[in-house]
Length: 500
Image (cartoon, rainbow, N blue to C red):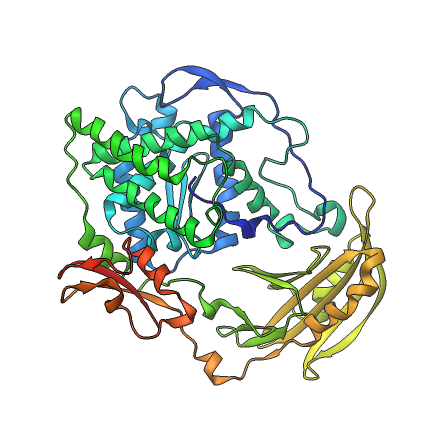
C-alpha cells in the first residue's frame, strides 16, 4: 500500500471493539510457491475482500467517470495477466480468483489493496502520475500485495489487544441498535488498518513485484521511480513526514533508486521495456476533478455548504469537519464529542427518524419534542442516555429535519458528564440547518485538470495562469507535473494545469 488516508482514523471515543485473528492456515504463497502459515485461508481472504469492498466504496465514493473506470480495469487486467496470480504453475484457486479494480473519488494520494483481489486507486494518485508506465508499476505493486498474501502474513503476527480485523464500531449493535457503519464507518477504518502496517520487507517485495509485472508487460518500469521523486518533494514541502504516508514504508529516496535498478535487472533478462503511453494517459485524466470537490460539500468561515443538495449548517468554533460520501462528521477540538450528519433514507418524517434511534432497548429517553430548524424546517429532537460496553455513560442529542423531500439526521454524543458543556454546540449544529440560497455557492464548480501539449518552449512557471483556482500553490502544480518551477519545458511536452 502506498499511502494512508488519515481521515479514516478519526475514532471519536476512546473505545475500540477488538477482533482477534483466530488460528492459522497452512497454504501456499503464490509468489514463492512455498507452503507456510498464514493468518487466513485463501477463502477467508476472499470473504474479507467481498465484505470490506462495499464499505470502502461507501467511505470514499467511486469516481463518476466510466471511461476512467474502464481504463483502470483494463490496465489492471494487463498487469494481472503477467503476475504470479495467472501463471501456469500457480495453484488453481489463485489463478481463478477474479480481481476488482476501482477508482475512488478522493483527492488523497493513495493506492491500496484488500485481500482476495480488490485494488483501489484514488484520483489524487492518478493526478500525480504522468504516464501509463508509472501507473502500471503502482498497479503491479498493489497486485503484488495480494499475490504475496501480505495481509494474511501480517494477520498471523497479531497479538492480543491489537485492533486489526475488519468489523466492529465505536458504538454498535449492542449500544444503539445500529450497524457500525451508521456511525463512523469504523469497519472501513479497520479494513484500512489491516493493510497500513505492512513491514518494510513486505513493501520492498511489492515494489520488486510491481517492477517485475510492469516489465514483463512491456512497460518502461524505471518510470515508477518518478513518483517517489515527487514524494520526496511533498515531504520537503511539508517539512515533515510525507502527508498520509505510513511510517513502515521504505524511504522514498531509497525506492527512487532501487526501482530503476530492478527494471535494469529485468531488461538484462531480455524483457524489452518500451511502453510509456503518455499520450493515452494524459487524454484519460484530462478533465478529472482535482483536489476536494466543493459540489459534494465544503466548509468556509464556520459554515458547511452542500451545493448539490442545497443546504447549509453552522460549525462550532474550533470543531473539525470530516466530509465523507455517506456522512459528515463534526469533531470537537478535544476529540471528546462528535456530531454525525447523514441522510436517513428509511424514515418518512423527522419524528420517525429520531424515534427509530430512541426505540432501542439500550437507550434511555430523557426528553423529546418537535422543533423548527432555522425557524422554517420541520424538525424533531430527543435527548437520551446510553453507555458503552465498558460502562462509560453517554448522553445523546438526536435530531432530524425534513427538507426538500429528504430526512436529514444528526446523531451527537459525548461522555455524560460533559454533555452540558457540549449541548450548545450540538444545538448550534442542528438548529442552524437551512436552505442554501447563495447563487455563487450554488454555482461553484470543482477544479479540473486540463492536459495539453506545450505549444512553445519556456520555463514551466510561464505556463501557469496568473491566478490558480482554490488557493492551489504553483509548487503543487509543478509537483504533479514532476518538474521544478524553473525547469525548461520543450515544445510538445504534456502538461497538467488545474483550471476552474
